[in-house]
Image (cartoon, rainbow, N blue to C red; front, side, top):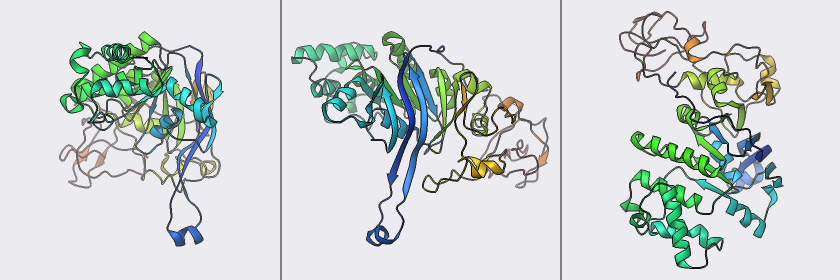
Length: 396
């Protein structure tokens, strides 16, 4: 597979953050007549997730756009208020915190946002940006003291010497330097928990590794637990102790990072892993093609939310919603038949024989699997995506 090995080892620390049946619904605003006659509708952004995060651990959250992973992160730092459920930070339920108690909680948790070009105020210098949380929470009695704290935070984020960067403006920094400033801002208060929302997705590939290794070093140095959110399976595997796979507001699989990659038990995880590009022109594995589009989070399917697209669905899947249950020690799956159906790693998915409907080229297992911009077709008989056309290179 193309996904790299994990750079971290399993964490066995105490639980720092425990989430139980967390739900976030966003009401859809209707017009005047709609508010009178139409039933009230909601977007089910997060729909009853449960998990924990341990001391010194990085929990990776991966899934398609719109699956609810960013909303989950925003809930954990209380940028959003949950509709229902509980969030216990060091055994204190922070879902109902208000006023001074909420402010004190926010001092202990921080968030690194996705876009370094939008998350920094263009009118603020680096010093003003990083020192703002210190001012808000009354940390540091003098400007000199805060300047020293900012310098330490910048050097922790590998912006050295700090004096060269402290009074620059965002337009004078590269994308990677801006993200390091955002990381320094998150670390300035010495937080006890950090949510990193796709912190490298907006950066050039050449500087992603530097930012990821910086975060790993900071976690090891300060033993800060992270929630690392990404749509990239390879990045998530490299960064995380455990991986939670989200689909339509639900966690469908949760386990050790290597266990999720090497032994996927949920059909959606199987499909997600098979879509990872393989940098080998001679690679000979097929791809699991899930049917249809992601359902609307407004009209969530009954039963298992994945059943309209699942290759293994049965009658019960349409009627009864499965619970997230432990199939093997530490491996949790939300599927009625987890452990019974045989999901496959990408290398186990065969390339079948077939004919390309675009150029009528013949495909055999001996042909390498490639991708192109041709439209895909689905082979109902074999219930899997076939290889690629040797003429137009269409993968189907």
